[in-house]
Length: 207
Image 1 (cartoon, one colour):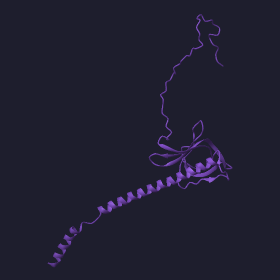
Image 2 (cartoon, one colour):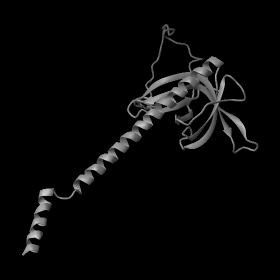
Image 3 (cartoon, one colour):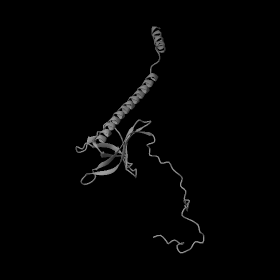
Image 4 (cartoon, rainbow, N blue to C red):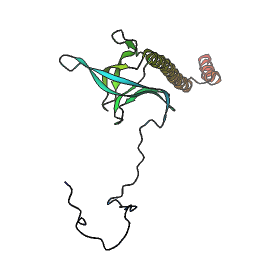
């Protein structure tokens, strides 16, 4: 409990109105303001919607679906790399409950016939910092929201596929250029230069 006010039993000798008194106390330790970065600063938000996320806990006996959190699920594109990831944070705490790249082979499947939930696999989810494969499920408020998510998810898959194909083509072109440079360096001397030794050899044989 709080200690009694030391002035409770004393009579003030000053007729001062303290009703508007607003004391200001300086903090004992002054902490500098620090900018908190979420790594989303370099990304463009393509989609955002409230949902509830689950993970399949295969390590439990028996295996079961465990709730990971409720919050906004986002699809974010990196402004320079062009990669796209799915990010979801819990309400209030903002703790990450899903964080993985969108890949072309990912497929959203209906969850137990529900029209407002989807299930999919990811080989590397970084929600717990260490990457690990997860079977995830997400549920939306209604079927309309679920369809909007799937539509954007599939669009992102196609965009990532084209980006990866472009990278493969660029890498192949670079390899071809290097091989061409090597072949140019390894080419034999010009025909004029090779003709001289041949003529000298023929003259020597005639003698």
